[in-house]
Length: 317
Image (tube, helix red, strand yellow):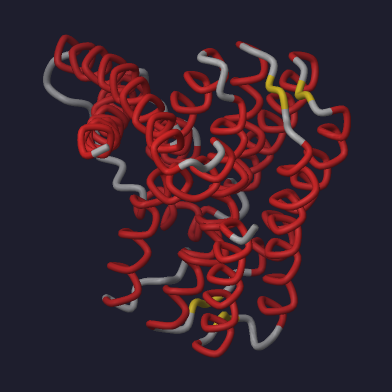
């Protein structure tokens, strides 16, 4: 079992490193093609930072572990809004932007409801995956179009994503970074999924439980670390938008691409339990956002309690 934990942790480290290399190389090439840093931040970086979750879900689906693929996405969405946002708000109040309430939250809630409706047949088909990608493309183009009217906040978002002003000195360096990133993501996802499956066997729990807890928390660690550091530094201006945006990408991008590559079987327990929790926490944050246009310490405690009770319910017989 110790070996399995070591493989899982090594996979997670290699995944994160691979994602970082892929983002750096891709961003530099995009800038070399004269694409603005703002658009790069909203597209290339946003997609790149979801690469670890995408590779895990694809690998899980291809290796016959669809519960890990679904648990990764559903569990990450719950973790983002209950644990990450809750902990951030507990440290310092998180302000809410108008666009987060008027655009991002409706898209996140709508995507969650669409997913819930489509999985009632216990499968996400390739055609449904294509639908997710089309919705994601429309949302992304709308955000870019709107950036012309509201560049200030979105430039801040692109800056928060650490987009450089220009490309590196050599395109070969960019290509090397991308190659290293893809190899790292491939190996890391293989190790991580293998370790997760073996731990499920060792602890006598289902792959759904491992996916919804360990895998989801592991893939949300970068967001958690970033949010906590930002909260300590009192730099939480766009934390809410980023977390909701991450949830949108998890559903539309990760499940979209994964189901196109390999259709995803969804078991009844994920539909009847975990997805209900995901819908609940997504819905609950909306009245919190309306209240004084910020998520404060008390609401942070509520969200953390929500996550704690959810995890308890997952392990309860």
